[in-house]
Structure formats: structure tokens, C-alpha cells
Length: 434
Image (cartoon, helix red, strand yellow):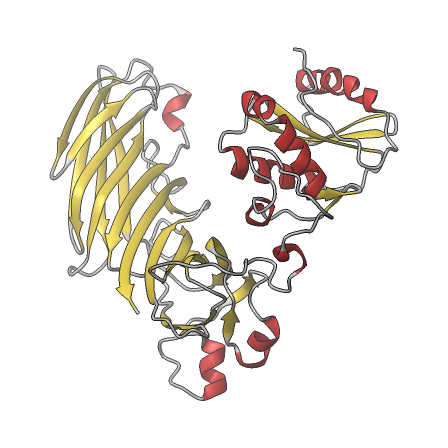
């Protein structure tokens, strides 16, 4: 394995750039010894690296205490500029890449990393020199650096997505052992001028301050805001006031310790027969009210890799074998609340007594439930104030989806022991107009 330096910049002038020749041999040796780490060293030179596609982004430093932030900055900016970050896009945009490297970093330290600001004066057609002294764009020096002056739209709108990821840990008996909701509020702003927005949530602390009814509130924890939010005002009276960036951005993130029950409960058992045959029985039960319906439900049931001769029987929907993934996929287009369905899958299994039968791969459930929320968070109002007094439409959408660790314990389908986990991946949509 060989590597060629595509592009580089020595910011501080204190490193021998020939040190890069030692990187690939060291990395190959680490890979052979199964000792891969994000930092490798050669003498006093330290290589902090990230691999993206067929590219290595390497930060060469003589300090072992540097951070990976430098590489992450560049990768994110390059991806937003070139869409597909690969060798060809780097070669086709050498001039732009060097300009970005000079603007993003100042003497080796991150400076301007917002691609919206960078695109104001670095284009993919190259930087155009102007007569006279160079002048940075207003967004670099302005107090509202995340938004440009003079933005105009014919139709003014704000689209707000309240997105929540639900993490569940449930015992085999059905009791919730751990429940957590990690949320974020994302904006798509199509507004003229320099508007001020004020967002009101059913925040428990706010309701306690104002002495309002507390029954329908949520307790936000670990709240993090975009730099546009006036933190002092939020700390004083919990008002979320801000001048938003143009286009798409994440306004805030938060966490809720709210107990959530599994919306679709799965039970699964396996029965062994003579002549190397098995039957997998999966029962799915919706645990939400009958007025709601889960759409596009997909239940993925793992089977051993040597299974063959599949036969299926379902009380609703259809099942198919996906041998490339070693799973049975049970699809249910519409799953009303309070219903229960069953799927049976028969397989030939030459090595029925093999260890693979004890596999610990999870059963996965994907679904969408329209007009349904889990946590109870609500956008009470979204006010738009702009000096010209134009009318603007705010739109709010609630989305609940699975978290990375969204799983609960269930009966192991291969051993009938309560040690198998399965994952619930849900997407729930609610569209409202404020």
C-alpha cells in the first residue's frame, strides 16, 4: 500500500514536511498488529488522522496534546463545498482548497469554519481579486456573524423540526429499566432582513417561574444552543430569543428523562424439529391507542447463515427472505393501535445444533406513526419580529425516531432465554401550523 500527498499546508513552519513519508509504513505495521489508533508517532512527530473514502486527512504536529478538531473542520467544510469529497474533487479544486485552508486556519488554529460565511468570498470558480485594499465580508466582523445583511425573499417562512431520538432499555417482563429522549430543534429559515424570533416551549422551569399549570410540561436537561440564541435572556426568564441564520441550522439540543414504553412490542421463539428443520414464531403487538396507526412497519428477524428452503405464513402483511443479510423481513403496511399479528417462518437448517443458533443479533423494527408524539414537548408559539413588519408563516413538524442505543430486552428466539435484545426504530410525524 502506497500513498501520495495530494495537498498540504505548513501553518507554523516548525515541522519537517518529509515526516509524512513515515505515516503509511507506521499505519500498515499497526494494522498488521491490530493496534489501530487515531494517533501514531514517529519520534517527536505525531500524526492525527481520519480516513474519509480513499483519502487520509492528517494533522502533523510536534505536540501530543493537540486535538482532532483541525481535521474535522476541514472535512466538514470540504464536504459542504464539493458534495463528494474524494481525490478527484480535490484535484479539480486545488485553488479553492488552498484558499479554504488559509481562511479556515490562522497560524494553525481554527478561525472561520462556517461554510455559509466562507462561500461569500471564496467560490468554486476561484477567488476574484478586486481593485483596492481587500475587505472581509461583513459577516466576519459583524456581531451577527452567522447572518448577512440585505437578505430578501418574496415569500417569508420558517420551518421548524422538533426531532427526538428515543433510547429504551426494557426487561423481558416489559418494565422500562432506562428511558431517555435526546432531542434537537432544527430550522429552515426563509426570511428577509434581520428578523428576531422568539420561541416558546412547554418548559417546566418556565411554567414554574410564571406560576402556570405544570401538568403538560417537559423538563429539559443538558440544553445546548446555537450561538445566535441570547443566553443571558434564557438564563434570566427562559425566553429563547434569537436572530436566526439564513437557511438550515440546528437551533438547540436537549435531553429528557421521560419514561416511554415500547410502541411495538415483539415476542419471538424458535422451535426445533427433527430432520434439521426450525420454525421461528414472531408476535408483534402495538402498544398505542387505536386512533393512531403505524405505517410501513418493517420487522427484521435474524436467521443463521446456512438456513435454506424458507416458507412463511403471516396473519397480515408479507414476509420475504433476504439471504444477503441473513434475515427475514416482515412488512406490514398499516398497523393500527391495539392490534396483534403473528408471522411464522420455517427453515431447513443443516447445522441446527451449531453455535450460530445461539446468535445474539437483534430483531429490528422500523415504523412511522403520523400525528403522534412521545415526549409531549410542544411549540407553544414562534413569533417573528422584523422592522419592516412583513407577514411570515411559521411551520412546525414533530419527528420521533430511534436513537443509536434504542433497544429493549426480549426472549432470545434461539434459546428461549431472556438475553436477546431487539431494536425499535421509529419515525413519528406530526405537521402543525402555528
